[in-house]
Image 1 (cartoon, rainbow, N blue to C red):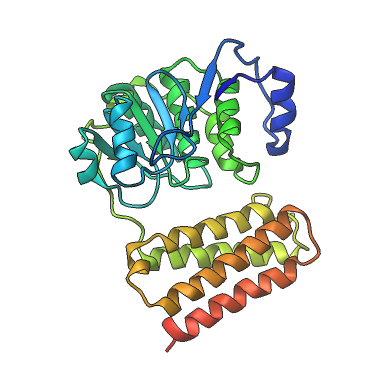
Image 2: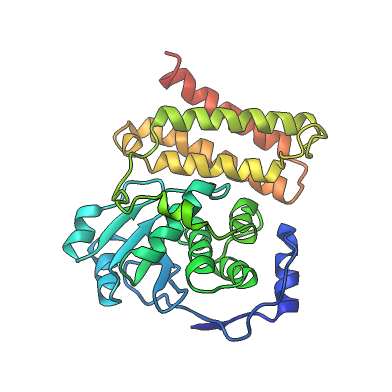
Length: 306
């Protein structure tokens, strides 16, 4: 399926939800193709002739699809450890530059730009699902290296399926400033093929911090507190949900008991309900938040506070 750049007026209405005012006009000549026929790949998009994006490759089939596409370098922005050996067997190099769902740090922006400019292509950029962090990284790379305008970058993220509940990823494109030569020269070319994924303890600490922020918004009636303009309830709930999802993908989690994994699944489900309630401004946010708290307490009772 071929998807041409949206008319600027449509683009404006589509992005109003994330409150990102547009500068300039979108190019009428850009063309992106979505191709779901690639075995082992999901949400596959051809950003340019040299840059693709999509999901984490699934087994040999996914890497074989990339090999047939001529991909030479895979850039993962997911937190999970990449399958470096399987990629190598298919003649591809892995580069692991994880980013969060809340945006892309400035130092990581520089690394992504340099990787996109210097590593052999074609390049395949992926996160886990291929709909959120990966497209945001592509938007940064292509603004720097493919001549994309800010509007084109925002359109690409929108078309990839990134929702308004991920404003940090949209900001990565909207606030992008090309790195200076000094910044680029400060980045060594020996990019890591895999970095140590977050540990369970680190993930649990992140959950606790997000939970504290949600409690702050709850005290404000599930609105942004006057003294914390950076806290948006629905966004914090989404960050909590994604943190639980990341926990579920840890190798440590796979090795744990079925009961532990069931409790984690219950917390994830409760977080989904909370995020849905806050996104729709529903009346059951308190009840949903209570279910999240009870799920965590139940798990802690068995596995943290025996």
